[in-house]
Figure (cartoon, rainbow, N blue to C red):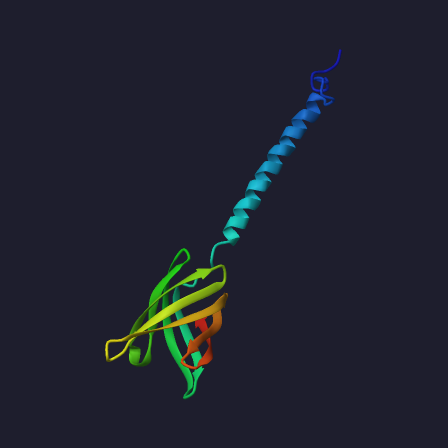
Length: 144
């Protein structure tokens, strides 16, 4: 008599090998789901929320200011602390490690000027460029 664990159900597999095959397929499915979840997590933008020391070189020398960023997914809001502590609102976005934000400045005449900054984030630092009047200005920032 043939034992039931080794009996061929007619497909060319023994019951034992069918059980092993099912277990392997289950493990493969779990690993595939884990890989998909990991890939989705890798698409999350870097976290830039918090205080940043923001600097650039002007025609009058080095300038250092503070950025306070809040992040909700890919959307950014915050404050650019300008000369004398003046607060200027900013909005922007981050996709993967690429950041873009726009600072709004109100003049004494009531006109609003906006400057857009684009860059790349790497850990606790970021760097990029902006158009300032007639020239391209490089900027850097590091997390406080």
